[in-house]
Image 1 (tube, rainbow, N blue to C red):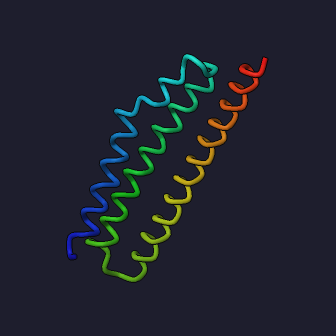
Image 2 (cartoon, rainbow, N blue to C red):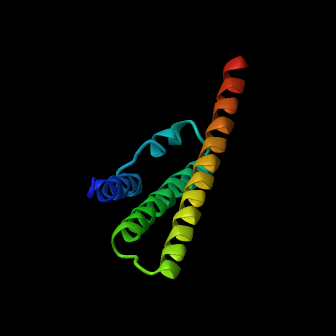
Image 3 (cartoon, one colour):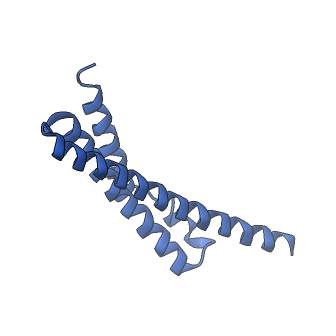
Length: 110
């Protein structure tokens, strides 16, 4: 149980690394999505990968390095802000997906 938070931080770091460098899902939409929106989606997902990697570092710091209450509060606020940023980025991506799906259905109905 002692290493569980560290393992969780490593998994979050790996997920962020994958999103940043190896995720091709957004690029595969380039054939059906407007090119400027697709570039925005790719950048959005890469930025989300960076946020996830920072979140992993703060998880690790919260568990292993923070001992003073004042710095623990700063790390805790950082975790909340990074999780909020990740949620906002995911919601923007979801809105782009909804818009793309509506456009595709409109094309199919014609």
